[in-house]
Image 1 (cartoon, rainbow, N blue to C red):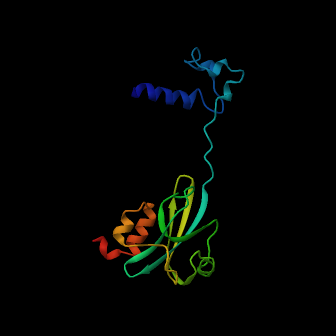
Image 2: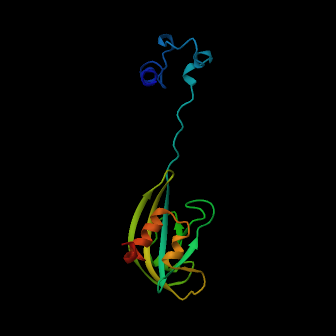
Length: 170
């Protein structure tokens, strides 16, 4: 099988190239479907990869004692249905003040803790993490053990392990 695969790769690199197939030199022309076409070079081209979408995710770490305020992401899109700290997704980066004003839970104050970038297949995700406070009492307030039972994207879980429950990592 390795010699056959190597031969096919060599054939594709030298004789049956996407830009200019040389059907007259091809040893497989008798069985090749492309030679039955009026234009053999109309062989399907490789798919063009979609342009990576850029997403900015702003997450607020809001704690009360050993509990963290969490929300479930919408079912579609980036990390659909998974859990995260209270956040806001935007197509562009937001300043801390813009995030504070546009917060879904009426943040009282917030300070930026870190920024990180995550490359996904179709998206580049820029994550800004804030430590924040709010007067809101309703919502899902979870301990580390309760949060561990919820589905979360790996970068989100890493952020929580780093900033919310670091001593429990040992």
